[in-house]
Amino acid sequence: MANPARRLTVRQLPATIRAGLGLQGPWRTIAIGLVAISPIPAFVFSMMVGSFGISGGDVFGVIWSRLTGTEAYESMTYTVLLDIRLPRVIAAMLVGMGVSVSGAVLQGVLRNPLVDPYILGLSAGAAFGAALAIAVATWLPVQLSAFVFGLVAMGLAYSMARTGGRVPIVSLILSGVITAAIFTALLSIVQITAHERSLQTIVRWIMGSFNAVTWPVLSQGWALIVVGTIVMLLLRWRLNVLALGDDEARSAGMNVERYKAIFIVSAALVSAVAVAMAGIVALVGLIVPHMVRMIAGPDHRILLPLSAALGATYLVLVDDLARAAFGVELPLSIITTLIGAPFFWLLLRTTKASGWE
Amino acid sequence: MLQIDRLSAGYERLQVLREVSFDVRRGEIVALLGPNGCGKTTLLRVVGKLLLPASGTVRVSGRDIGSTSQAELSKTVASVSQVHRTTFPFTALDILLTGRMPYISVFSSPGADDIRLCQEVLDWFGIRHLEKKPISKLSGGERQLVMIARALAQEPRVLLLDEPTTYLDLRNQIKVLDTIYQQARAQDLTVLMTIHDPNQAFAYADRAVLLRKLAALEGTDPEVATTAGQDESTSMIATGSPSDVLTPANVAEAYGVDVDVIEHAHRRLIVPAD
Image (cartoon, rainbow over all chains, first blue to last red):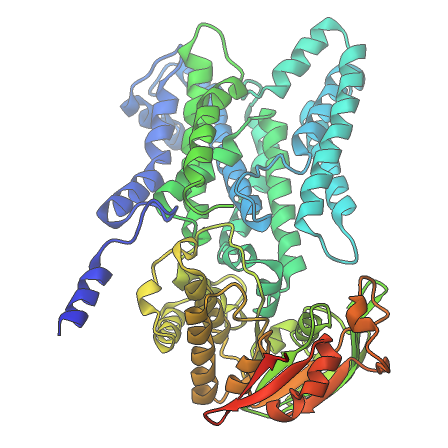
């Protein structure tokens, strides 16, 4: 009699949290709910802040009056809010969302929690492409060149790793390192030969900024980010299968190489557009999925949608800091690194105890 | 249920398995034995279509697996590999749910029915209480049971197990093998498993297949290679009931060691010869 009773209480005990399973009980629900809705207040707040301050009510008022065609505000207000601030805020949210989802996806596909979307040589390739367009081939649009060379770098890494129809994970990570090294070398050539003014532009670009985002820039890239992210979100449960190992996934009937390709190509396209729009934003795609895992655990069914929400919130708030908190506009990577690095350190300390290898 | 016909396989130019033929009847538990490097794991990988054979065929319920898609095959054959490392601390239930992959259409994820079925499988194994525990916090034995349960969540007819007892202590070895035995009998499952301990083959298998390591292989243990008159045309030494296969002569040929077979309480045991 005593035994079943004891088993019942053991079963009712909350399962261990510290094991990387995320929070448990009501706190988990509350935290997940807060993260899920966070992009809405973050959007309103980001529209409010800036050298041209405006109240939250007026944010909605301006958007509403533009939609309905009534001219209730000064034309200056429309220009600042709708032509300058709105595209920038949307871009920051889209890039934050896309990079975070891509990071979570690549961590799952490559079965390595310390991977970010730049692992396949994207950042180096894109940086070279941007530098080329800034300093040498000035007729090239910078975003386009960054996008194309980012993809070229990732394609190179992927094809180097591919042997006999399969893409072993270790080869993929190593060929990413090699590709990054190649494009970093090429970037150095451009930098050495570049004029001082374009050199400064290159450095600023490499450190990331939404400064240059306007409606035309946004209109070129948003669709690819949205579509790629939706594909990854729709297939997200399959990451649980894939994350168990190639043989396990294959024996469960999964076409492993096909899904790897779909996930990697989607993540590559999304992060290449993100890089083309914003330059290189360090550590976001690495840190955001981990923040979500701390709240909700490793299940990709919930990890991916929450990473999308938190990524959007995080990057738009970082951009608010970058453009409004100081006298001068700061590059994004300075802020994301200063926030991300201590977090990363914390992660290394705690995950040692949580069973990650 | 399973027909393996003149199967040869290997990696790159290295032939590991040569001309292996045997049948497994429905509901049978068959133990694969042989020295390290004799191709036991390779054989299981070929049967599970994780590796393509160099020549020969494998038929499951009469169908050549070469012309069966992976998705189709996974509804009949499930395998559990030897070592399992998890990067992410998924819960036992999440791991079992991945076994539902063959039955879930492209953009969907497992539903309530799948969860119920997986919980039922956990019940069969007596590990329902582990449902919400992360795999990283489980013991080796529990982890192995979860991985076998994951394979059963695929609702297979054939279960391939690669050394299910490696790295387990005695208690867990017995627990895992007992569970496999009970489930195989209860579900009318056909089990093909590699195993190192011949005594476990006596205790748990209906039949045994004994393989030898091919001498042409690099790094062959010279002790084994010099066994006089080794037949190099096939990897198979013997197949049949465990007591017919695991004779002192066959064991000497496979492992290059002298053993005695003793009988205790109507059970056979293999012990090193004095």
